[in-house]
Image (cartoon, rainbow, N blue to C red; front, side):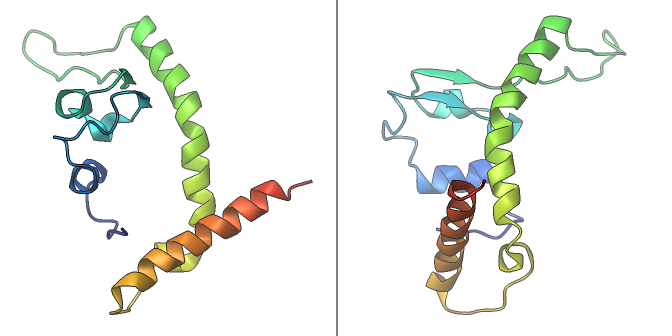
Length: 127
């Protein structure tokens, strides 16, 4: 199901995948910081979430991640970049990026499936 861009990813995700069902119990999951709480709502085999920089406080006026945390975040972002590049490639189809004025609900889903198919064809036929 297609959602407008203003909706939060994790909120949409929870609507599509009911947390009370064991959707991901056998999977290793890699998510970004937009999915904080995923491990609390869903049972998973393992999960990788980037480290979040601590909040500024009186006790910690200049919060920083440790070098180990930064290295782990860099390693995770290297894995996530593949998905980000696919999403960016699909956004070449302007109908996915700009406001689409249409009142037939299934057309949005068809457009994203077409864009995904054309993008997959593009990747498969690179020389």
